[in-house]
Image (cartoon, rainbow, N blue to C red; front, side):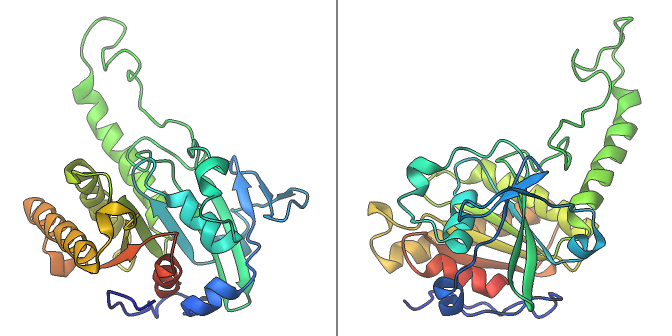
Length: 276
């Protein structure tokens, strides 16, 4: 199936190879799935192993971040592409991601990387790698201290520092950010506002990070024609450009690649092959 978009594979990803979509689709990729940031199990049902993501050998691997709203299809993409799960199985075998899940994809010596799958909407401020809230003091009582005085002004510098520390922890060592948007869940305004905020923080922490948007679930009755898919992608691109302009940023200053994807055809394999 021909690609409706053009995208240049990222050549600045160390240790990764621009595998073709056919290679990714046809190869056996029994990548481990990390559960609760501590244990992993292979798709073949082998025994769990411990993966230390602080190990320099793991930490130095290229890192791909999967972000986006709930139910957008992030985990389904990962399971279909890297674990050979049937697209139909994802409808009843997968539950909503509750915690950050990290996995090591070890396909070939030239194609090794880690995937960080974030729960929907929890890639924003206040979510750390351990999956616990990182809110500051006073958060539980709405920012009011024990004497009944509002301490928001005192907390603001601390919260700003926490957000910068969080951004540095998540984005500074990432190779690529894949933001998955559910094309069937209109309107996109709120999602794209979150995307713009996320991209702004990511680029601030890591100017070389590659930003990819998967306009996902372009299947079903809404997208029977290619024209409907192209119109959807064009609308998303325009809205992102408008959001960036409102934030005082130029769309040209932040290179973003857009991909039309579905787990029910070859498009998601091709899109991922252009990222890795």
